[in-house]
Each structure stands twice: as structure tokens, then as C-alpha cells.
Image (cartoon, rainbow, N blue to C red):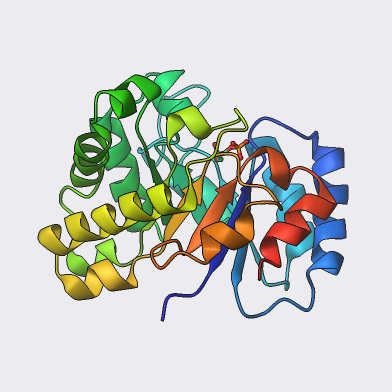
Length: 250
Ligand code: G3H
């Protein structure tokens, strides 16, 4: 009953010129794919060009971060109102690179989720444990904490607008993927957390993507798992052939 949702996160790759050209190629290569949701998460400077190229297509455009204030003296930041006006539909929040390189806290991420929803943007909330946390058997504890904190203050209707991306940090850009079964177990656990926070219906309707070294070779096995509804793809989303193959998972 959950629709598949494949997202590419281009991170800090591609210039505006490259991003526009790539979006054009993607649009034509995926024109016939209508039975699943597709999104690209692009750098702020690439939003305008990519939105223009994808206008009228079924591919959504996301920002990879934002600030939680509507406007103000916040030099260097980008607001939800600006993003909405620029034509993005979604915003990736709490990515592990934001948490661990830029020091984003659960409290900031919660404010960003709140602000996104207040301004009509759909959050893709990233959660996931570090290698040392996994080794200490803390995967569930960490994911639960990140989910509970990020959803603080959200109504049931708002919760239904959030997509979760489970991204074990040790699997990001390393070539190591969680086994489909291990990932599925964590996804099932996250669904249980949502059922505790809200109800079974929210748990069952929420799209939970897996992220971390997703590639053409492992997407089919990942998507075959009951609780894996999609993917947040980094490196393999930067090349046309590999992203198209991932979107066309079987
Ligand atoms: O947002 C995407 C993730 O960080 C995964 O990146 O596919 O390069 O491992 P990756």
C-alpha cells in the first residue's frame, strides 16, 4: 500500500550548468516511469535550473537543508519560504553529514521539520547510527531517539507528511551496505516507534527509505524487503545509468 519513493541526493556535486544538463537527461530517461515517486536533492545554487528543467515532469526537487526561520538577519542561510518559492517540494533534514560535520542537534532538526511543514515543504528526515553505536548494540536506541526528537510537537496529520530515510552512517559512501534483512529489521523497528508515538495507521503509511551505498546491484534485494519503501541514493545518483537502473528497480 506504500508507494515506492526513490530519491537521489546529489550532495555538493554538480555545477548549475551540469545539474541542468543532468536533470534534462534524467527527465527523458525516466519519462515513462509513473508508478513510483522520484526526487532529486540538489544544492541551493542548482535549484532554479533543475526546477526549470523538471517543470511538468513527475520528478520532484528537494533542497538538502534549510534554516528554520522564515526570514531575517541570518547571513548565509536559506529559509523554507525561499525554498517553496523557488519550486522545491521537499527538504532533506538531519542528514548525517549535517549532524556530524556541521553539528546539527536533534533540537535544530526538530525546528527545521516544524518550519518545513509550516511552510508547505515535505521533510525527508534522515536517521541512523554511527559504526561505534552499532557495535555497542545501540542502533535501535539511537534511531528511536532521533525519531522521537524530530517528531516532537507534530500532529498526526503532520507526521503523515514526513518521509524517513534510515541511513546507517557507516554505510554512507563506504561501499558497505547493511544487508537487506538488517535494514529491514531497523525499518520495522522505526515503524514500531511511529506506532507508539501515533498509531498503527501512521506507522503503516509512513514511507521509510534506506540509504547507504545503494547501487544498481543491491536495489532489487533492498526493495524486496517488506519495510523498505524506497532509497535515498548518494554516489550512485550522480550517474545517469546507475540512477535510472535504481529508479527502475524490479
Ligand atoms: O543521502 C544519501 C546517503 O548519504 C547515501 O550516500 O549512496 O553515497 O552511500 P551513498
